[in-house]
Length: 163
Image 1 (cartoon, rainbow, N blue to C red):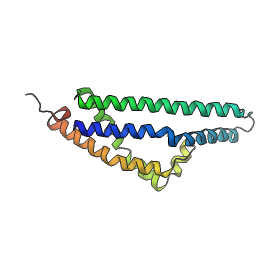
Image 2: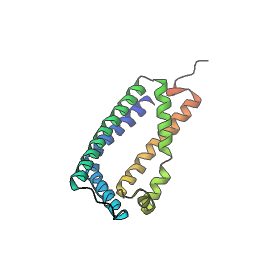
Image 3: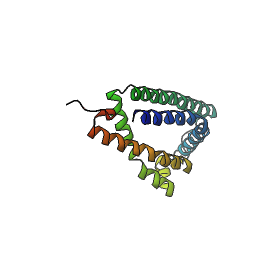
Image 4: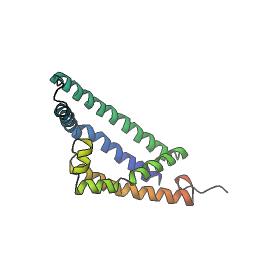
């Protein structure tokens, strides 16, 4: 089980490291759409200068890179926690996998018809992102169920309970 969790978070770290490369352009598009939408909603307000929009786009791309580094550090922490069988890491991973397992219905809805979500947030994400999330949901949910059953029957990391 420890190796499965370590492997899952190694895959998650690799996926996280790819995000800035394929989401950088999307982030710029989202920022531009956001400013245009604000201009349409408030026609009497002076629009921001192009330099401000460029600065905000650059800032958001920087935030994306920092978030990636934090995400990779968290994945590394969980890999070490799994290999060292830290009890607290087991429960944190269990909760995170449990929260991740409830995203499947949202991903299915967004794959079939994402207009409602797009209207709510004001921008659209590519369908491939939802498909990838759904594909990665399957092993994540299976790992969650495995860890939950192991915790109930044998304790954290499926180690034998001391009576």
